[in-house]
Image (cartoon, rainbow, N blue to C red; front, side):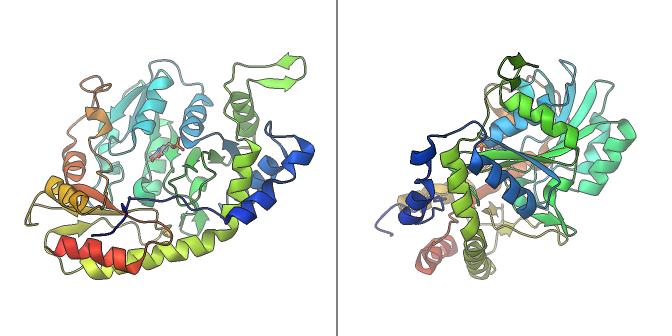
Length: 368
Ligand SMILES: Cc1ncc(COP(=O)(O)O)c(C=O)c1O
């Protein structure tokens, strides 16, 4: 048993000296927020890193999604097709915009929305599709685009897990009308708290700028109703530092995933999800499915590892549609696959620096 707890994730950080050196200039300028120098610098670096024409930084991924939805001015009560196999933020962002989520089932292979089941959910009230690139697995973007085009719907991707992922050689935020990222402390790339909206239409930049900064366009001018969702300079500097180390961080995550792959391949009853071969990987998560062929249940595995000081996550269980605040409130068809995945899912520890011995300890326990 490891001496200290092994948690499912641990935040990547630059060295203490590097961060302290980087934030020093703030004591000269006293400029801590309001789209400062470092906000601008990170926005421009991320635009090129993520290979997307336009990008707007936000205070977190959730507000990025709320504002991305709000930017399209959908009529109150409109329907949005989405997936319940996600973090609660996706569904909250829809509901907090006074729209109705309509839950669609997901695919067995990778956990993303099942595009073959979207059309039957479309009604005259449908205005958008909000799919999730869950665990960094890219949704069937071409099929979704065709459906959206046919029915004149907007597509906003929740790409909170898909930082740095490209599909067919293009940054993931080039797909759909907008895509949001989360830079939360637990993500592949973090700014402590933070997020961004990536998109192609330049006019959206101004709209989102208003929504994230109270609609202020001059000392005496407020042009629309907006929130405060700006990223501050300390967070932007953390992002600039972490971005420098990102290639190493991703390489190290690959080492861990490769070792899990190797150690787990012979275990009967443990299944892995598989993303598209046309997409790059960011090694954000290592989800496994404890199927009926395994000798015991998902919950038993969770408890057994916990008793050994290893803390996995049932990420995503329950489905968002089953949470107390949403249960029986919104329409959906059968969600059989989503329910099954949710009842079998476990996410293994994965973070920069996770030692080989700990990986082996975890997989040995799974070998039982
Ligand atoms: C799928 C998904 N959407 C949205 C979010 C919200 O991001 P944040 O925590 O940065 O607000 C998360 C965060 O964990 C997420 O996993």
